[in-house]
Image (cartoon, rainbow, N blue to C red):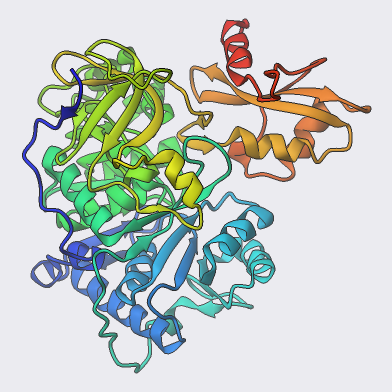
Length: 519
C-alpha cells in the first residue's frame, strides 16, 4: 500500500464563497431557527440571519473595512458570532477567532500578527479586549450588546448604508485560525473560501446532515472543529445550531434534552464523561443520532461505551487546522472502534518512514502525509514554515504517527510533532519553554506531555535552575501569564535536560520518562 485514496466519490471543489454556502437555503427556510442560544433561548431565523449578515457587511464597509482586512472575534459561542464572521467574509474580509481564555498579551500577539482592523468581543471580556487592541494597534473594538468604551454591535446592523456589492473570489482568504502546526509557536493558517466550502462538502458526504437535524455546537467557534465544520456544515444543511457559550456537562446534557439535539461533535474528555459520568443517566438523550469525536484520538473502549450508553451512531474523525477541519471520518454505518475513520472525498494519504522517506505498507507505522483541496494555502507571513509542512508535491506532513489497516481505516498511534493536546486544546511546548526562560532563576527548560486519562495529556516542565526557585513558584509564574489550558500541571527540577551534541532538545527522552513514571 503506497498512496491511499478516499473510498468515496469526489465532491465539487470550491466555486462558491462561504456566505453563499451557509445562506443557500435562507430564503426558503424563512423563519426556521438557524441559531439558538442554549442558555436564553434567543434565536435567529434563516431569513433574519441572511439580512443581518448583509447589513453587518455594509456597516463594516461604511467604516472603511476593505477586502483583505481582518476581523477578529474574541467571544464564546453565540448566535451573533455567525453574523459577525460571515458579514466580514461577505465584505471581502478575513476572520480570525481568538480563544476567550487568552490573556491580554496573548491576544495582542495574535491581533498584531494577523494585522486585525476590528475586534469583536462580549462585555465580560471587554477590559482585556481593549487593552490588547491598544497594544496591537487595532482600530476599533465592537461589543455584542452594549458596554462603555466600545462600539455596540447593533450600530453596524441598524443603519442606512447601501448593501455591499463585492465580487469575492473563492480563492481569496476567508479564515485565519491560529495553530501551532507540527511544532513551534502559534501561526496564522490561511484558509480560502474554497478550502472551507470544499471541506464542508467532504464532511457532508459522510455525516449527511439535513434540515431536520439539531446540532449542539459545543466545539468552540475559535477552533477549526467549531468554525470550519460544525457552524458552516450545520447552516449549509439547513439544520438548527444550538450554541453553548462555555462547556458545562449539565448544561450540555440539558441542551440535548431541551432542544432534542440529534448531532454533536465533541472532544475526547467530553466523550469520556458521556461514557462514565453518572449524571448522564439523569437526562433524556434519546434524540441523539450521531456522536462524533474529534480534535484528539479516543480509546476504542471509551468509544464503544459511548455508543452502548447513548444508543446512537458513534465515530471518530481526524483533522488539522492546516487541513481546514477534516482528513478522515469514521463511516457511520461501519465504524471501527479506535480508528479515526477513512479518508474523506478528494483526499489521498501516505504513511512514510520518518527516517528514510519510504512509503510503508498497511499495518506499518509511519508519519501521515495527506493531500487534497482542503489544504491551507500556507502560514501567513511564514513561507519557510509553510515549506517545512507542505512539500513541493503538495503533501502535508502531519507529524502524526499512524497506520492504515488493509481496508483503509486510519489509526493514530502517537505524535512525531511536539504539540501537547490538553482536552482538545493545542499547547505548544516551545511557547511555555520560552516563557520559563524569562524567569531569572531558570537556565534551561523542556516541556513535554504526561499521559492523563481525562485530559489526554498534561503539560509538564523539566527545569534546570541557575538561581533559587521552587516548583510551586514556577507553576505560579507561568499560570499568571498564559490562558488556563496552557498552564503547567507539574514542574520537575532537574540537573540537566537531554540535548544532542548540536544542542537540539531530545524531547522524546523526556516523553518516554513521563510515560514510564507512576501516576
